[in-house]
Length: 201
Ligand code: VGL
Ligand code: ZN
Image (cartoon, rainbow, N blue to C red):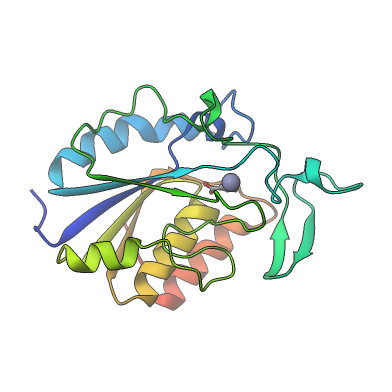
């Protein structure tokens, strides 16, 4: 077993990020058995779930003459646009059916506000609105956050860097992640982890 002060943060292992989904990450489903094997080593497991209203502002379909993966300026800064994905209460937003972590203690839903996206499990994309997870983990006596899931270069990256910024020791297990990799974003994530003191294992 891991230390009682470690948490496994399982990020967005949802149908839309797996092959056949609306924002499929290559090999996304391959993380499921790896995470299922890791989870029993942890006393604390938290899941995140990307959870958008049907007309979320991160969807390219909501922007005139924009395509998925274009960037627009939002009031909080640049925002990549995505295919419609992880709409609340749809099959695409459900966890992968083989994800088997009955002991998970908390599900953090994020991106539920129409006008702002949230890659990180800790802060929305304005980088200041907290989700509450930081306070929850602190109150539970957590010192180390171990991140796995989808996508390595977006939600895993932002969650891990925010965990570090909040003062948690932070580790990303690469064998339990897959990347979207839009023009070098996976390499950028690896470099950024090195700069910020996020351990890659
Ligand atoms: C994610 C893009 C949009 C992710 C979520 O889970 O990495 N990426 N929404
Ligand atoms: Zn999303």
